[in-house]
Structures are given as C-alpha cells and as structure tokens.
Image: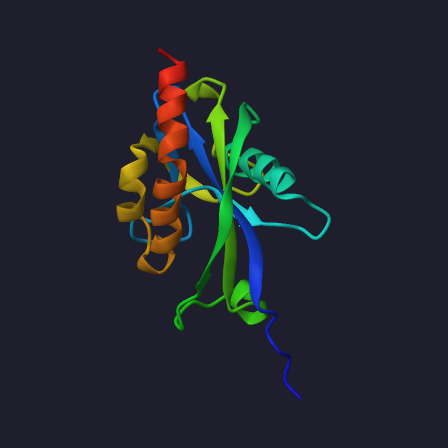
Length: 162
C-alpha cells in the first residue's frame, strides 16, 4: 500500500511594502538561474497566518521590523510541476497560499539574508505590478492575485505617507 499525498501544503506569502510602495522580492539560493520570489513558508499546525508571516520574515530576511496591514480574501492553490523533486513534493501535490500584506517599518540595513538557514542570496525592492513577471510560471496566479488584491492597499499607504 502506498502513502497518499495530503492535498496541499498551507502556506503564507508575504507582500512586504516599503514606505514608497515597493515590494521586497528575494532571489533563491537553491536555483542556478535567477529565481525571484516573495518570502513565503508553510503554516505550522499550531500557527495562525499572522504567526507564520512574522516567523517566516524573521527567518528569511532577518528582521521583525514590519506590521501586518491586510490578509488576502482568498487562498490560491498551485500544483508543483512534475519535475519538481524534494521532500515537500513527496508529501503534498502543491501549496495553498494565503497572501499577507505588511508594512516595513525598519531601515534597509536591517534586512539580513545571512540567517541561520539562508534561503536567499539577494533581495531588492520592486514595483508591485512587476512581481508576476519575476516568478516561475506555475506560481504566477498567486502573484497576479497579489497585484489585484493589494494595489489599493499600496495606494492607500502612499497617500498616507504624503
């Protein structure tokens, strides 16, 4: 008898805005070609989405200088491609992602990718509308949804900073 895969891994992806409305993306360590993405991570059974967002950002970009401003209305699921190998693929068919918008309250110098388990080799701020073009195709629906869901939030942040 073979083990059945458990549906989708629950995940949070963080849309971290700076004071001028740009979004943080980071380049993955485990890819040979440039592979940019939003910080993201699995939701542990005992965690809320908010807990996951806070933990993952601290683990992945080395700072807790942010505040949650919104959680997307819907989850977006994607399947991992057939060629995707690894521990996660053996357990789940893909991920079900909840997007979390946050406001970065620190200075760029506080972002530190040299964490205890570095996942990224570089980071940068980009325009929200540019993030779908940076991501691998199988995750693009999540990034398209992020643009639709969080453009009004970004615009409000910019107006509040005037």
